[in-house]
Image 1 (spheres, helix red, strand yellow):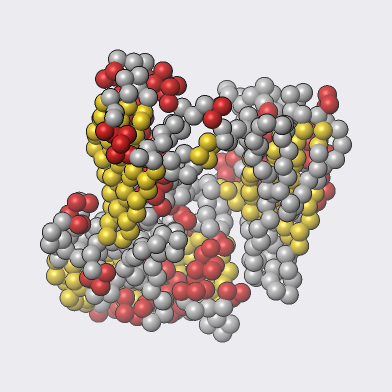
Image 2 (cartoon, helix red, strand yellow; image 1 turned 90 degrees about the vertical axis):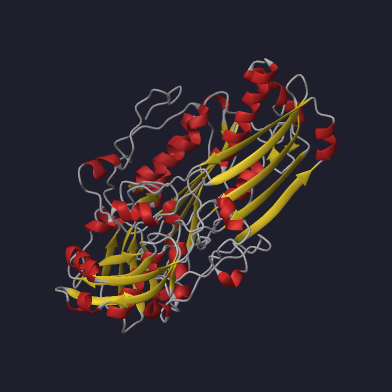
Amino acid sequence: MSARAGRIGARVKRGDDPRLLTGRGRYVDDLTLPRLVHTALVRSAHAHARLTRLDLDRARRASGVVGVLTGDAVARLCKPYRGVLLHYKGMKTGAMLPLAVERVRYVGEPIVAIAAESRAAADDAAALIEVEYEPLPAVLAPDAAVGPGAPLIHPELGDNILYETRLAAGDVERAFAGAGRVWTRTFTTGRHTGVPLEPRSLIADYEPATRALTVWISTQVPHMMQAVLAELFSLREPRVRVIAPDVGGSFGIKIHVYQDDMAVCALALTLGRPVKFVASRRESFLSDIHAREQTIRVEAAADGDGVLTAMRASITAAVGPYSAYPRSSVVEGGQVLRLLPGPYRLRHYDAALRVVAQNKVVTSQYRAVGHPIATAVTESMIDLVARDLGLDPAEVRRRNLVRPEDLPYTSATGNVFAFADVPSIEMYHIETPAPTIAGGFKGAGEAGATGAPAAILNAVNDALAPFGVMLTDSADHAGARPAGACSDEIAAGWLRQYPALMRPRVRAAVLTITLVAGPGLGPANPIQRRPAGPAGQARRGGQIVGSSERTPVYRGRPGRARQALTPFSGSFANFGTPMLRCYSTNVATS
């Protein structure tokens, strides 16, 4: 163990690297089960069309094929679903099903699912399916979605507008009327998507005798998927088990419910045997959620010194034919709406958001939702103002930034800026079984897994980083592959060493680690909570002031607003899973 002045330029070990780099990772495609079959999908070649004919006979007779599923059959197994957030008043969207029924609404929408004894056999059978289309006018550009005579993507909705809202503060008209200068620009952002090394993949296995569904899936949200699968397929939630093995990257694209994933589960329910699907890279580009297709028209008013006085904006977000389920496709536009004023003292603001449907791949939340768009637009406008006035762009920003004496400051859109010279940090590590690790335990992060002791190490390291302190491996506790279960004794080993890490400038701190454990969690065996907190004096006068599992901890010097630390107190119902452990590491200083 050692303390370092900082991490910049330092070699930092990642606890899971040795296992993954030596080929000991275990991803969905590494898994195999008895009687496993593989899935291929026939996808739409049109952005918008009616399905007039499907010829499946040759595919059903093809070698190795064990099942062929169409939209009508899936609709009898899976409920339709809509990505609507109730607190977004007036939001609407068309219903989704795993496979298209009667109409396709984007290139790549799945139409038929084929199960065969190998992926090659499934792909060959898919090539034998004949699909006849009646092409329909497609809505591609955002303006075309709302123009006169625009084709309706979902006729039952009446138009292509999924959501509209407006946010205004101050007296914008008066501010613009008295402005020294007004700058107007229109910004467009193209579509992005995450491209993880491991594409989306899953295995679904259904046991008809007990109506139990087990799904191994590359996902960030196994608990959400458990609830979603139970609801959509009318299964009892305790009978649905979702396992996230090692995950080869995500960046946010693996927090959504995809049509092809639901189609694979429907195949498993139909066949009563395990079904695997691993998307090809081409399929990923056609079906993974996209993000950031927006058009933002901005007007900024400023005086002769470059001080912003008002801003107007019109935001159009084009999100594909459906709002993504269950997190929706409106959040990104809403973030841009609220973030455009940036960290600047802008009191007069009026902006409107319109979210429209189009015949392209569905968009939704992806890394740094809305922030890159809003930041690019606002900072470009600041640069424009500075250039036209002949001022230093850095000086223009300084003149507009929220100042320490303004804190706490509430922006025109309701964002609160408060003083905190050392932030609170929360890290979560959730564990699901990992067959390749002794004891079966791992910490599941967005892009992979770590051994349980290393999970604690990483969480504490992240929490201590603002103090210029870092933990390194020790013979007693570190390592990517724990020798056995991560017991309370191992966790306590880290906690005992924690006080010696505190620097002189850290007056006091709170460290909370909550462990949640329980074999076969369920109503008969409720989740157990065992908080562990350090005690004792830190080096050179620093003091550990306590720990708490549920009660927020507030510490602060007079006259300075401090962020409250709320230790993790969520609960997980992971029915049927042999073991779940959860670590929440929180550090706050005062």
